[in-house]
Image (cartoon, rainbow, N blue to C red; front, side, top):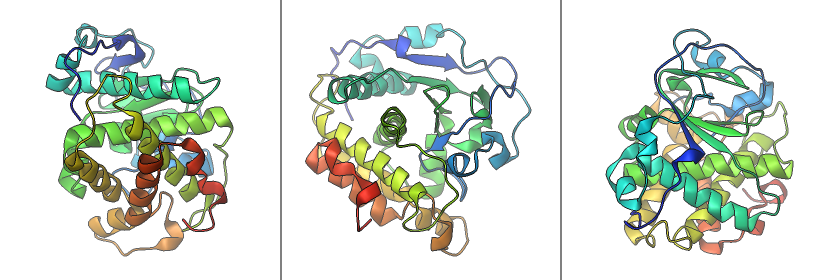
Length: 289
């Protein structure tokens, strides 16, 4: 996605916590992932109430303070031109656009902070490492991601057009924030094709599509091109349970699904994109996923 060069960015909505302190294990809340680099991603925290670091053998090592002030690097992300040239400034621009949309679309919407980290981070949901993948932590009401995730997403799972992959992942994680505000993030113990875990993730995909429908409305970004829409489908398909299991050399096990198949993720993103209406994203009551 291309930003309007004259768009004015607000870098204070993103915390740059790359480099620095040490993990502190400051919480045990429920984190929610957007699909990532293994068969068990952060949605498992919702199901089992676990620590993000436990998924990847984390829980120790270096990590920044997620409450640290913004670095001078992000402070220089001021315009759409910066976002078109720098990956971290793109994150700032996407967050600005996503939050502006939901502020107008959802009554009572409150800010969710995005934290960019490297190596590891301590959150209200526990410690996580770069291998965890992007996730949303309800106690912090924040999104956490290491930018190296997008390189891995392309290298291992074939998600092309990295700029739109970033937009899709961020919009999905903010979909979890919307769910949290609406009271739709609920713990459970189920996995499988029609589980609440899958319905939760597919709704977040649909919410991402809804934002994409309106992305050009706020003048941060230029209208989506057909190529970018195709890239959105590619990114969504890359993080389907079946595709991840196959790409990791395993067999497809529907009973273990926690995010939905590639076809489902593409279809629900497309549903949101074509409709532009969050009311059309009620996956919890959908008879067909």
